[in-house]
Image (cartoon, rainbow, N blue to C red):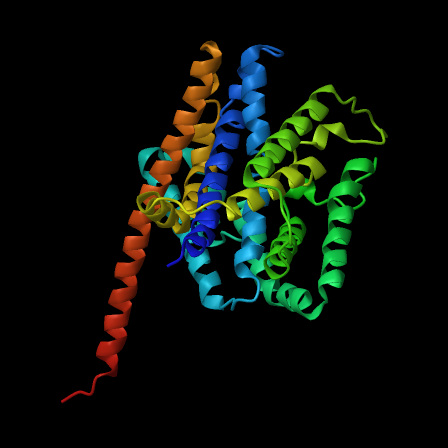
Length: 357
C-alpha cells in the first residue's frame, strides 16, 4: 500500500477520534461546571475558554466526514438498524444499571426512553443523523447530478442561509437551533461530499491550515467575548462559538482539510487510530446518556478551577482522555457481545434450515 493511501486512511480516522475527544472536552468543561467555576478574566479563564473554542468545531468535523466518506456509497438500511441497536443498547443498559444501583433515580420517562432512542431525544446527534441517513441517497443524487459549478453554488447558498444569515439576522428566520438539527448536518454532509467529488486543485500546506483552524477558533472566542450582543443588533456575537457560526465552520474546514492531507502515520499509530475510529461513537452514547449526564458528569469538574492554569488544563485533558478511553473499551465489549449474538442467530437460522432425518 502506498504512503498516499495510508494517509487517506489515517487522516479521517484521526479526525474522527480527535473530534470525539473534543466533544468530550466540551461536555466536561461545560456540563462539568469547570468553565462557570473559573474566575472571569483570569489566565485560567482564558486558557480553558481557548480550549473550548478549539473544540467547538468537533460536530462540524463529524458532519463533514459523514459526507466525505459517505457520498457515492450505498446506504443500506441494515447500517441504520445497526446504529439504532447500538443506541438502544446503551440507552437500555445504562438505564437498567442505574435502576439497580439507585432505584430512586429513575422516573417513568427514564424507563420508557430506551425503547425509542430516536424519538425521545436521548441523543440529539443520533436522532438528527438517523433522519440524515434516510436523506443521504437524495443528497448524493443532487451532488452527482449537478455540475461542479452548480454543486458549489448549492453548497455556498445553503451555508449562506443557515450560517451567515443566522449570524447577521436579528431574527431566527432560518434557525437550525445552533446546529443541533438535521438541516445543519445535511449542509455539512453536502459540503463534505462536494470536497470528496471535487477536491480543491490547490490548498495551503497542512501547517497553514492548522494555523487557520486555531486562528478562526480563537477569533470566534474574541468575538463572543468582546462583541456587544443586544436585542435587535445586526450581529449576534453570542453565537460565534455555536456550530453554525461562520468562524467555527471555517475552523472545522481548515482542520478537516489539514488532517485529510496529513502524511502517513507510523503503522502502530495508524492501527490504533483504525481500531478506535469505529468505536468512537460509543464514547458519545456512553457519556451523554441522560442519567450519566445528570448523575456522573454535571458539576464534577468544577474542582479543577482551584488549581494553577497548567494543572487545570492538564486535569481537563486527562479527564477527557480517560472518558474517551473508557468509552472505547466499553464499546469494544459491546461489539463483542453483538458479534456473539449475531453468530448465535446465524447458527439458529442454519439449524432451522437443515433437513430433518
